[in-house]
Length: 117
Image (cartoon, rainbow, N blue to C red; front, side, top):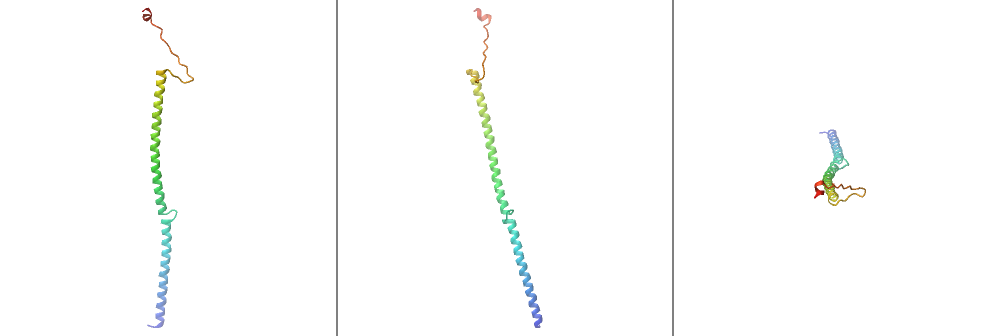
C-alpha cells in the first residue's frame, strides 16, 4: 500500500469516527430532552401520576363528605319529626299554644237526658 492510500483510509476513518461521535452526542441530547419532557417536566409522567393520586384522594374525600351530608340530612329530618311530635303532644295533651294564637274550646251543652237526671 502506498502512503497516499493509507492517508486516505486514515482520513476516512477519522471522518467516520467524527460522524459516529457526533451522531451519538446528538442522540444522547435528543433522548435526554425527550426523557425530560415525558418524565420530569410539568406535563410529564411523574407530574401526571401525582395529579392522578391527588384526584383519587379528592374523589374519596368527596364521597366521604357526601355520605356525611346524607347522614346529617337524615338526622335533621328525624329531629324535625321528633319536634313535630313534641309540639302535637304539647298542643293536644297540655293545651299549649304559640304566643300569637288563641285557643277556642267548644263545650257541648248537656243533652235533655243528662239534664233531667
